[in-house]
Image (cartoon, rainbow, N blue to C red; front, side, top):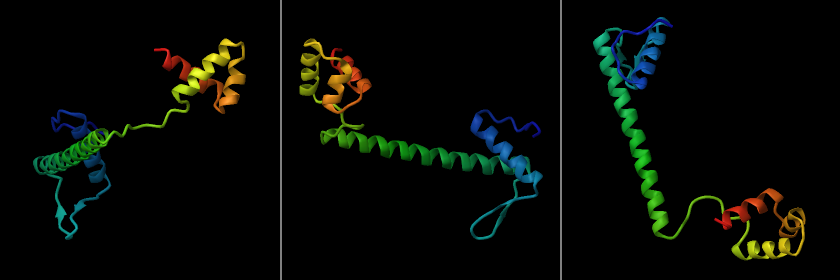
Length: 129
């Protein structure tokens, strides 16, 4: 690919410039849903079109992020917490500590609680913080 000399400043514009160059190299053009061909061969026209496309894409992404944040905030306000539920309750962790204190191995305690040894160890470490 050849370098592009449109003086674009950020990575998104640079990527669009590469796409634009590739389209022109293959003889392809942009066509609207109405069938109108957009001429991007002129540097100024092409840059304008790609800048508008980039702005629309950025706006759409910001709207998605905003909606996601609002949804998470609303869920938190209703008492919902994201993520996977804990494998062990605080009572099970207390029971595990008692069994470990009585000399049972982590493997045996994990088997009784029907979790992996790794899950038991992680739960014990997290609970002790």
